[in-house]
Image (cartoon, rainbow, N blue to C red; front, side, top):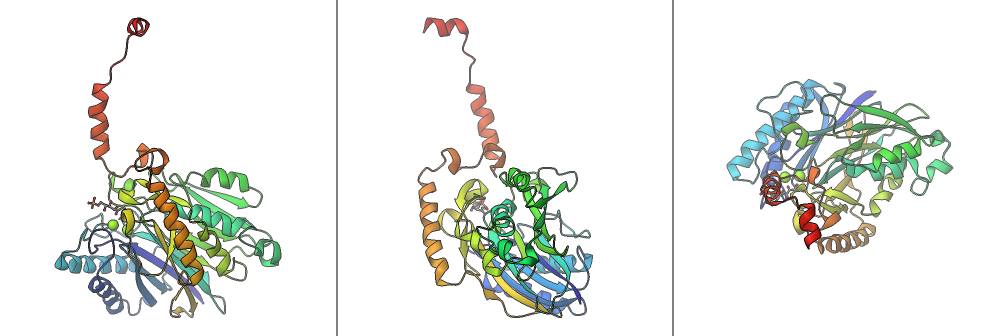
Length: 373
Ligand code: F6R
Ligand code: MG
Ligand code: MG
């Protein structure tokens, strides 16, 4: 049976700042999806990470289905009404256009989709991150699909012996989707050369070279590029098929033990370590730290099992402690140097005005003055 798994997420309002949606808001989105989805959707799941709500669908409408995208958009519009009624902060924040036009891409919400012939058992992972951007997944994807230090299956399993193809998007190119496909292991150094710059180059999908099937899909939205100004960080979602010809679940989770530094954190303008968290975790310290949740499912004939919370395990408590220490440490240097993102990535326009004003105060010192001093 050929099915599509689609996840669409948006920040449409939260309690107490950019922290967490209300229970009523989540319930409203879930209720809207349940009411409107009959005949279109096989199954769905609604959850939250930080201030973002993610709707997961299974269906047979294919990738970029207008009907499925519209259902998600309408659910977020309905949720926004509730968010406004409750006076939630940032109600409707990620709905950047007034009316739906064919596809949520370019309208604010983030989307990741996988279409495949269902295996007899089809396990997959849904990742949702808050207070960071899509490049945050570059390093974990590189390590779990191309590095035997995390993926022992690259050594041990004949079904992964040919490696994987990475489709990488240049997200600074806004006129059209600009993508390159590179093969691991032969082109590892080229892949690394691009992925080292996660604000510009983002893994869009990964495909098995053994069976040609899609393994992973990542949202590549840059809200900054859509709106031309700060509208919140892009808070990416990702779907990863696991086991068999794909990495094992634990091999995909393994790189998240690093707590690698990503862009985002307070005001989308800082560097912070990515903390693997349990589902529905709000953000806190310095509007962060950047967080990522992971729900594991099996899908069978389009029906989802209940979700298992992959980072809800004592092992990850130890990682969370380490990440808290890393977050505290980098925050000790405040605005200085690499603790804050470069000028091009700062998410607030205020600094542009400030720099213009300061610029006027600079004077070119004359060579003669230099000699006199
Ligand atoms: C980062 C984020 C928050 C806000 C901050 C200020 O992605 O959502 O850190 O940037 O709380 O929020 P505003 O500008 O809405 O007052
Ligand atoms: Mg927000
Ligand atoms: Mg968010």
